[in-house]
Amino acid sequence: MSTTDPTPPDWTPDSWRSRPGCDIPYPDTAALAREAARLATLPPLVTSWEIERLRSELSQAEVGKRFVLQGGDCAETLEDCRPQPIASKLKILLQMSLVLVHGLKRPVTRVGRFAGQYAKPRTNPTETRDGVTLPSYFGDLINRAPFTAADRTPDPGLLVRGYQHAALTLNFIRALVDGGFADLHHPEYWNLAFMTHASLSPALRAEYERTTATLADGLRFMEALGETTIDELTRAEFFTSHEGLNLHYEQAQTRRVPRREGYYCLTTHLPWIGERSRALGGAHAEFFRGVRNPVGVKVGPSASPDEVAALARLLNPANEAGKVVLILRLGVGKPAALLPPLVRAMEGRRVTWMCDPMHANGTTTPTGIKTRSFDAILRELEEAHDTMKALGVPLGGVHFELTGDDVTECVGGAAGLTEADLSTNYATACDPRLNYQQSLEMAFLLARKMGGGNGRLR
Image (cartoon, rainbow, N blue to C red):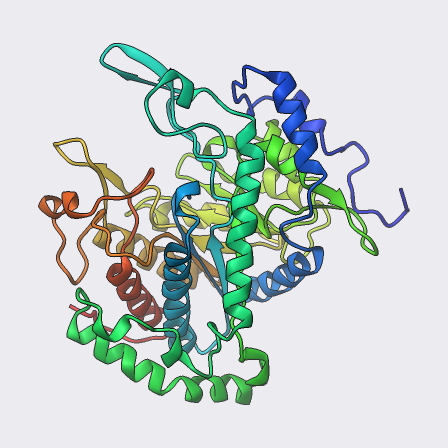
């Protein structure tokens, strides 16, 4: 190991195995070892230079010179590795980012919850139906959704299947981007179904038309500020992210690369540690402290400021720029009270602050359907922005669970979805997502809020 190697001296890619918190109950350990070894021989899904580019962009978001839009499915399924769902997610992220670029007058980094979001933590490890208790469904990287003993048993073969579907997704995304799908000079080409979208309100359609028509003005404005050039913004990039829940999967694709120091986790650009698995002495903190990727950490209302600060130091002892992303999931009505002590505890630490207004705002209808309120999501986002602004700390990004399809999973928004509408097209594999119109409306409202405007599209 060279003297400049940033790898902690007491860390190895498998040192997490001695820590608690990654207790996926694989019954066939020999098959698990075999599939993990096979996965380790396969090419990386992402490259170290892409990871370093994202770190550079996150370092700009830390100081308010860039904004991060992170979004996608709560839990991808292998079945949805098809052209239409992938293109729809890219399209809504592009449209949202266009609105944000125009409203915020700064570059936007697009990070998808795709090409690997196949593992999902659950509150309860088991599920009981009609007196039968089986393991919970933890996502297609671990087991399967049907409620049978065979499907719910963790299957090591899904490690390689998940990798294969992530590779196919990435290949299609890169082909679309390289083919001009994300060319910001021609936004009219990638809003393919937008103008005839049945559920889109006239107000949203008209405002989006105005935004696309004046995009060039926004790009010239940023060029005049000296932040970037129009040529650098010609094509929108996409980075990938997923929760690094299954450490067998992450370790198998973690390796050294030529001409760089340290280890890179090459399953994704931006892995994150979930709210349930961020314990300081746990397996996930141990694994991700040793990789060069930027690492996200979900921070819920129960997190103590001292605990979060200690975790940030563990993940980033050298206090490098673009390394740690704190993704706040506090709940509506809580940012004003909880954010100031968190920010004070992080004083002097390099960190990108992001708001996830989805995960602490879930509710269940009287009939047992999980949903989220558009208005609660928006209010938490507004509260986080206002509190961060008062503290003099940039809000560097937002994190949404969303889809480009016309699902009916979250109530509210300009379309006025109610609990009675949820059964129309409730299609999520796990948690409720913002649909196409709700996502775009949220982008307009966020751009208006952060850009200094007033009012809502109601």
